[in-house]
Image 1 (tube, rainbow, N blue to C red):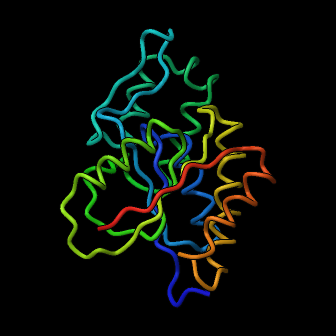
Image 2: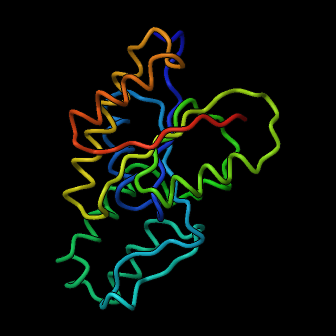
Image 3: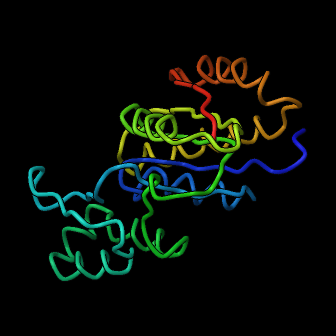
Length: 194
């Protein structure tokens, strides 16, 4: 078993649904976890597919909640956005952008391939300082409430198994292969360095 707990990051596009659901479940299971978005702005569904609500990453969950409450309380209650923002407010003040974080992690889990690409690109473009490895694993999760919950439990189970390995560096590939077979999902995996 590793000498210290895994330092985890979960990243989706806007740090609203998938990464926050996983953050919530991992936190409840005792993991040291942070969550992020990798996009340039925070996007939430709007009144029409071509009219999303767009916010800066500096906007708090409370500010987003109040803005949507004013815009259309019925719509954002029905589609679950206000409920999601309430959960998010209980976990942390607001969305965070991965590219603005200086913390080091042992394992970064992304929720879609585009986000995985953005995270890997950012990590490989930085100047290496400590040469500490960080594993980046993508678990494709559809961006809806039900899939976010299922994906969060899968991520949690994966993290629990990794936490129990004697040697993460040498055992993670085999573990990911087992999870691919078990979940019928394919995982992307690479190692970057800080």
